[in-house]
Image (tube, rainbow, N blue to C red; front, top):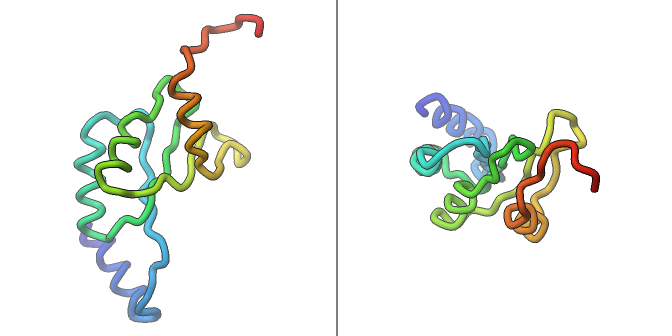
Length: 110
């Protein structure tokens, strides 16, 4: 955390208003300790938004919704795979539909 604080101080020497955005990247597979981590990062560097990764696995990212709500932070981006095209802007309606959808089974015909 001290290194992150130092990076912020160095950036602010060049531009007092920097950084414009501080994104915390969270793994969708993380459990409840993710909230503690988010609070610590926020206290250290002032997180302004969240990025949720690994949504292509079995995790549904519910803990990130709890973090966003508890800390009043927007979810900015999500990652749903390993390719560049699998990373994109977060869309709340699509996310809620995915969370509420029944789990998909293996090779069933659609």
